[in-house]
Image 1: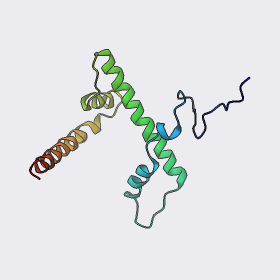
Image 2: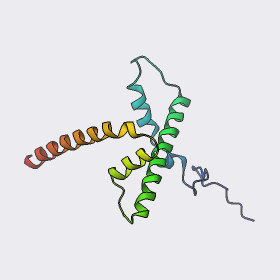
Image 3: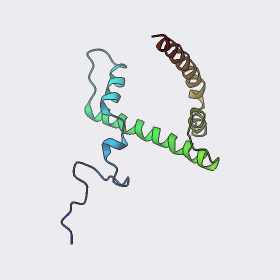
Image 4: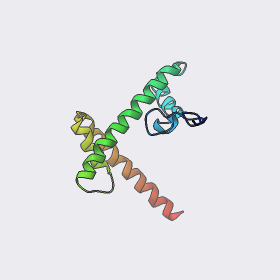
Length: 122
């Protein structure tokens, strides 16, 4: 019998093929920053609330990605694009978010195209 630990040091096997917890979830600092924008300046957010939102958001993104990935595999596509993710959202019942996301994406692309043009001249 081996004396090796069951879990890798500093990690959490968590049933995800040995993937560490910090690799499965979005960074807590990013989640916390976004959450703080939605409350009053002197408001506080409990650590367990941040961790719960972090897990939910990470699972939601993973769920969308898996649905889009399955579509791409069936269609023999090698790259998941925004249309695949929007399709996944629609099939999962999030149709009301698709148009606002398309508007946001269009605005985002316009701003970044404009910024890229200025980078060219600098």
